[in-house]
Length: 169
Picture 1 (cartoon, helix red, strand yellow):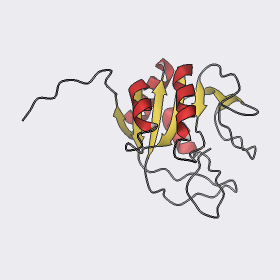
Picture 2 (tube, one colour; picture 1 turned 45 degrees about the vertical axis):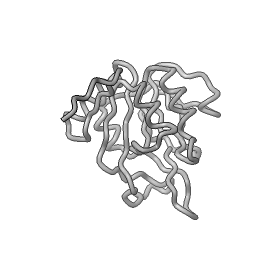
Picture 3 (cartoon, one colour; picture 1 turned 90 degrees about the vertical axis):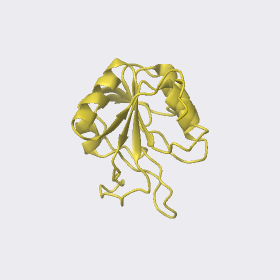
Picture 4 (cartoon, rainbow, N blue to C red; picture 1 turned 60 degrees about the horizontal axis):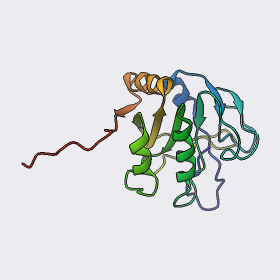
């Protein structure tokens, strides 16, 4: 589920099937499932309560709540500690409280075109103000993001583990 800043509207948004089609994989667990019971993520199971408190296992899908300035930080920490899955976030590279720490831990990141998320009633939302980033942690996640990039779904980036010396020009 994604939370967009839409005053007066629902804060629950679902990942469209085009994302899962591009990734071409099945997940073991959806760690942040829709509150309204929608069953749209190709996952064998879903957490029943608080995704941050429950046990995670296998290859996970994580589209966490986007609300709050630092709301993504605990989700991304837990995601990278788990080490096996794909996470979806806004592509806010300037969001230093969470983006840069996540970048330092990611295996790969796929910057997608703007994705129109789905409302609980099944209708498509308007184009969001920013793009989306898909984060890979683990072998299966890297393979899925590489497949999506080959299919033209976005631009694939590989974070460096250490900062190379940048020559002066």
